Length: 131
Image (cartoon, rainbow, N blue to C red):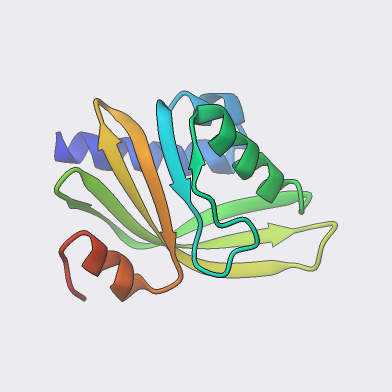
């Protein structure tokens, strides 16, 4: 199942970048939880597919175009997938390039928890790994 989890998350990045939010919604468990990074204007947690999607769509609305660029490998760790990435935003607001690490907890082939970290080492530690 671990490689399947990685492929689901990898597909999620492709779907996000294609701006297909309906398909992205389909990757989320009905009771998914999102926790944004410390210091984010809306830290959450956001609970449930619609609340999480509302938060993602609100974040995307700041720019005309945004994309997630994975940095390095997708790491599977005990039912979680960890990926360092850069979120590029272009358009209406000032251009932005923000580096995060996402930890996706998987359940039955769907994303059930998304936790976003500024610090990659902290994200790895959260799933029992080290740099």
